[in-house]
Length: 510
Image 1 (cartoon, rainbow, N blue to C red):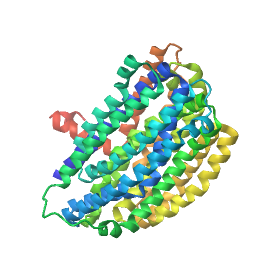
Image 2 (image 1 turned 120 degrees about the vertical axis):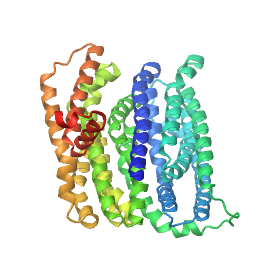
Image 3 (image 1 turned 30 degrees about the horizontal axis):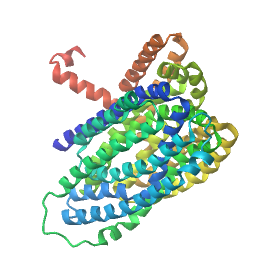
Image 4 (image 1 turned 90 degrees about the vertical axis):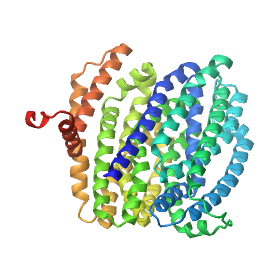
């Protein structure tokens, strides 16, 4: 019972932190557009892409530290072994960060003048911004190492509060810089560098505080803990490499071929579609260490129940967003940005990426069960197939049809992976349970919510005024969320229990 309360608290805390960060970023995106324009927003999109590509250098080490910390809590490794493992990672991350930062700063002029298609921004400002990105991206990446320690220790409540503070500084605090120095893109990235340095310091102190518990005599440093985990880390490294390739290749292609202003509109659509991905991240932070711990303790039935509950929870959360963005993309974009022209150009891209992201989030559950079992062979093969399909597809689609082309490839391949590869994974790790999982935990929620959205798209007369449009979008979203919640057996049971707990006559009235 105590562990059930703990994981619910961790999931809730993670969602609060993630939802706050998403909401504040969504609110601020049109503000950045109005202050800096679409070209500058294109640079922000380029920075996001650069951050994604930097994950190639991770080599599976951040995910491995989550698993190792969880195993320490399960009693399979000692505190000293974990401490040596993290110390070795700090050395590796430090060397990689210095080398990568130096390379990006050195190439900043070439990127500004030959890669990006700049038309109105001063080239020197673009070059300075890219140079700051070269320092900023490694800084955020190293912070991910220490966040992995915190996730492994299941300190999601502290991490959620800290992330809320960082999101406020990162997204809202920059307005103070604009007021003092002007809305110049180089000041934007300079401020982000300062906030990221503060972020790294905070997670460094907290993670070392946790690892420092039960400190024994000072250990002699050795690379042995890293060597012992090399095979597992390298498997994850390929998985992450594949993930970067099929999540960032489209952006890399389009950043080269699209004018920076058009790339800004594409980045806006992709940012809106990425809201779907946020629903999967918090629950994975709580689910991975707990699933790993349950399997380590041979509590397999408890692990399978948790897997199903987590699937329903994520489906309830992402389904309203996916179907709303697919059916109501243009009114949502008009309500969000206040620009009808931007909404018109971004809507087709948003629809396709929302569907692809939704399929991707649900497909990740097959990865969670393999990660917890410590066997990623099928995930390795599946990602190899994905890379083989997506990379050529993105190059062809991006060069011929721009963002719509890459979005179509993402949606088709993402849905194909979910419907054809995930069953193969479940046959190995959840024998005899796949169809029950698909029908009960996913389709029973997706089908009625999609039907409701289709009806809403036909009966609501979308107004032209922005405030009225925001109100109508909010009403539509509420209807979809209620449909999703009441279509879930787990959510219905949870609401029934809450009703009986807080209203003594609820049972008889029901």
